[in-house]
Image 1 (cartoon, rainbow, N blue to C red):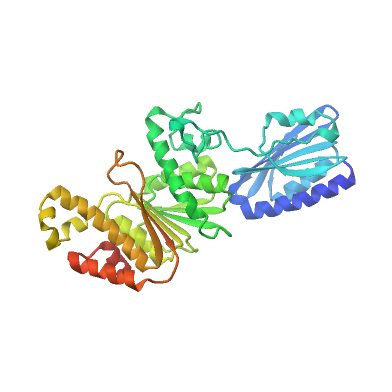
Image 2 (image 1 turned 90 degrees about the horizontal axis):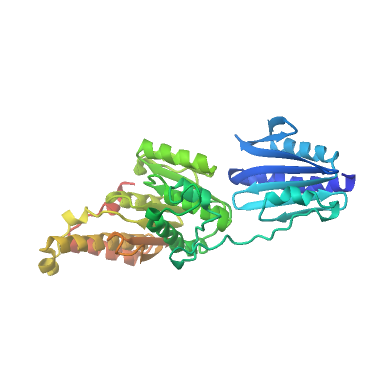
Length: 402
């Protein structure tokens, strides 16, 4: 390759090096294909502990990306053309170089076309595949956010899809639930600043399925830089989550076996999640979100037991004498008071139906976005409810203790 093309290729590689330094947690691979005459020579690079493990011409070396790119540039001197693919989660960058031109494009790579394109004449060897949305899944005629095709690796890892790429019959309901979850949160990401990296804390994460789904959606669909922290007291589920992250290559995640109330973050938390945390564990997560001044707090509560054993309200005596009605009212009161406390702490709160009541009676999602410092009127209302109901909710106690 001539000096002029090599100089331009070097400039493009400088940009690739900067990109890797900023996005190494979502880096996937490097692929090179050199052409000389009718022969094609391929190389492959993968991530290994902050470095690139690169194999070419039967030799493998592990080094900093700057040295790998310098090697690729040096090797290019001996060939007529180069196709260089830099892949991140959700993004493929193609650099095509020959003696006439050097171009760089964001493309959807069809790897079977690479060698075919290199077989063309040097001035027509660019691969041009405009980025297209993955095909829409037609299950239940829904336009899915987490689409079959582009999200197959994720769906297989969380056991929703078979190895041959089909949604399992007994997992269709689960697939719809997680997709609706993303739908309910999608607009929130547009309301908060996405400059830098969004740090998302999943409290009581369990096997972290929904965090994996959000990680995929933010990184590969929305193109938002994000970092996930999962907390759970169970060592077993934490190890399971770590293994899944490793299998998927999701390096922008960490998991800790720890009680929520003992966790002290070492970075700004933008979003706190609490999904199906039992009883007062939801309150613990809400209190943590308030304490760290999270921009957004999302909770899908599970069982409600605390207020059921506490509250009494004389005007409703004829209602609460029936145990089942008292329990249902306790559920409503618990989540209503949670919403009111969040408002008191400066959050704009909405309570929406998460999934159909036919699926489960525990189907509410509390969404809170920080908009101001405090709301004294809402705090007064909360204190009034405590007094009227003769109740001392866990959320109030956790906030006082912390």
